[in-house]
Amino acid sequence: MKRILLVLLCAAVCVSCTACSWFKKQASATFGGIDQLSIAEVSKGESEGASQTGRSIDDYIDKIYQQLDDSGESLSDEYCTGRILSEGDDTMVFEYTMREQNAGYSDEEIKRLCDETFVDNKEQYQKVVDEMTAYVGKPCKLIVRYVNADGSIIASETFH
Image 1 (cartoon, rainbow, N blue to C red):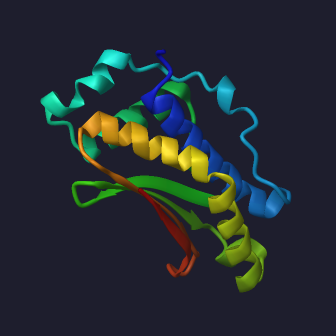
Image 2: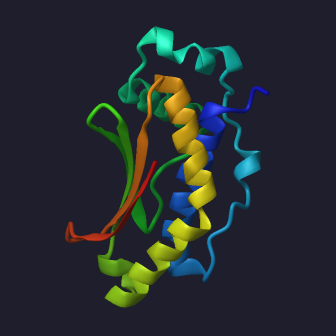
């Protein structure tokens, strides 16, 4: 049981980024290719000992970026730029900013597509929250946010 923490998180990051590309390319976001990610694994003992180590959300985010660097994966693509940040001491944010306003869709269509992505990937995002909570040793939240080129928020969802 070595594929815990970062594999789930990187899968969710890739799903969100895939969804961003999907706005231009096709009508459904999938988990295709996620299992093929060559991401270093985190041992079970590391996540189980989190409450004694004083790990923070920022530590967790640093590990994600390191894993992305090691695997050659990116949070950005031709349609959006992605980043991961912390808000407070219990919240991690996946934020995707469109390079073009609404990625070329109407306001209603882009909102609907984002909302469908949240519904389709809710289980995966919940796994990320569970692993993040185990890593830092306290209840955590994940916010997935899509932002337009002008800075306005298209859609945002919080997972507990």
